Length: 354
Image (cartoon, rainbow, N blue to C red; front, side, top):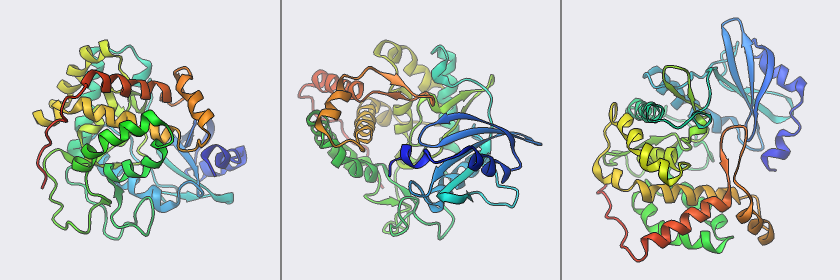
């Protein structure tokens, strides 16, 4: 069952019942995407209620991201705190298989909705750096189940693991399949463990500098400007891998002219709180291509018809109410342009691991 079908049965009564678990009223919709997000008002202030369905995610899949978010907030990162329900549960189960969680509300526009200025992108970079610094000493609580499948070892998927899960979808389109083939050796080299993290086969967790738990989808639409700082939201699927992938995702939607102007400011803000070595900085263009390829593959994950996929290639760029840019054609076009500009250049050298 896809998310549209699963969440189409979320009735106003179920939303109200979920809000009551946190003592919230005056509930109104904010974003009816993969998670249906509502804003509610409690005696202590407004909260964001996130609804999903057990056919999409079970409670075990929701807890690890909440643990990471709670750690990051306590460590001072610019994130919203997860909130327990009135009876102390981080995840509440509702009738008909619905699940709900809550975080603190943050007022302000998305970075994607604001004029892209150097000051804004410095603040965005600093927020990413603060998140990475906060996550340095994070370790999942022992016996935490894997967030994708309880039968898998580890807790959080690696970027390499996600990449290979997406490969069958990439194979549906010839251009995307070609890009996956040329980028896969790079992802295999520095995409983290083949499975999930922490890796039971590596008890010392001996990954070199530049690796850690990343947000996983750190686009401008998942960042809020509150008037003082950028606050990062939407911690659905933290991924272990190169920290620089968060920076690559942050700049992916910038046109070439703005990337040239704003990319240095994003990095400047990041470096104010967190270091990045020249090796990873130099590989940001390749990482951005990998991010584009992965996004394109997941975009067609529920599409099997060749005609439907081809229609997506020519569909106009659009955005949903979460600020996400939705365009399979634009992603594949970016990859084609980069491949053409690189020609037969050799792949970049890779940083040593472990």
